[in-house]
Image 1 (cartoon, rainbow, N blue to C red):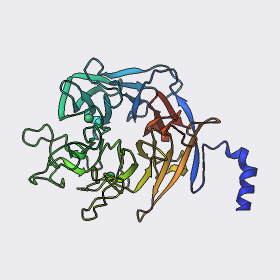
Image 2 (spheres, rainbow, N blue to C red):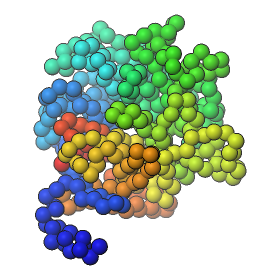
Image 3 (cartoon, rainbow, N blue to C red):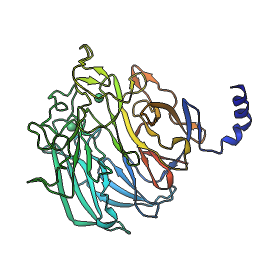
Image 4 (cartoon, protein in one colour):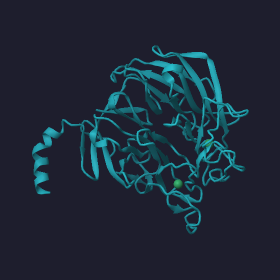
Amino acid sequence: MKIIKKITFYLGPLLLFFSVHADSTRMDVQLELAYPDVSTERPIQITSVPDDSGRIFLVLQEGKILVLPRNIQSSSFETLIDLTPLNLIDNAFEEGLLGFVLHPDFSNNGLVYLYHTLQDPKRSVLVEKRIENLRKLEMDDSHHREILSIPQPYWNHNSGVPCFGPDGFLYLSTGDGGKANDPHDHSQNTFSLLGKILRIDVDKRSGDLEYGIPPDNPFFEKPGYRHEIWALGLRNPWRIHWDHSRELLFCADVGQHLWEEVNLIEKGGNYGWNLREGSHPFPPSLELNKTIDYIQPVFEYGHDQGTSISGGCVYYGKRLPELNGKYIFGDWGTGKCWALELSKDKEVSTQEITFSDKTEILNPSPVFKNGKPRSPFKPVNFCLGPEGHVFLLDWQGIIYRTI
Ligand SMILES: [Ca+2]
Ligand SMILES: [Ca+2]
């Protein structure tokens, strides 16, 4: 240990040139501000434009998708999609444009999918649109297909950020519909699309549906079940992420008052809400029912460390070798962030991540005042960008990028 400390002491000034320092329990990662001169209020997601331009799509919760250039100092941008004339939002905290994903064959068909809320009646919809000029990124205004519409009883717990799996099917995480305690028991109701992860085929049609049901879905043609369901018992799964190279589906599920969780989603799995919060009984006064086969989170933390998990992504790249193969996520309430590693035999270990912009630490240790977290940094998403960078989206309107 002494020798390592000495080496670190002597190498300290040198190590500052690297963007990541790490040991087995924590790491420091350097960030820089991205697009400080562009108005990026309530950013939700970033996706790379799949060409060599280095451009990104930036999804804003108010209902816009911007195209931003490779140069993160630039103040120029284009507006690709503007849904703000639609009646998306009654409560701006969780409603709005909640996700955007490109079709796996986007470079040939230009198809994109948006998940957003609508009012009167309150609902969430999955919509297909098309980009006709893939270089200039111009919309084909004649193409609009509403694939799925889910009635929403309340403004909260709509979840979002759909993604395509390695099988080419679209996965969509839906919240339990809202309020507290899942008052209508949507998450355990196998005839409700709420509180689920759904799996659909956007290229086919089943019966009157605007999508196909893959025949290997776990409840395909099973009476009493919606056949779209891939997994159930989720509360507000913000957000899911497919690790395509290991074929693992990660899901961060926001807890109620006690536990935040990271799950690995299995076909047909029941993740326990509203009979469990994390690995604990719900309501907490109940004894844990061990007779039902709920799937435990692979990682959970209590509300002494954070209050609302924001799922992220698994990083692969040479730019940040200490993060390679690790799932990066954080807490919206306290700003605490982690890298989760899964060994070959699925053993889980985590490291805390301290993010810094030059010398300023973005996420110091969690601070609670009168029981409420106080954080200058409110991570809402962690997204892979072009050229091996990770983008961190601060819901307060600030975007950071790893160096
Ligand atoms: Ca809702
Ligand atoms: Ca759970």
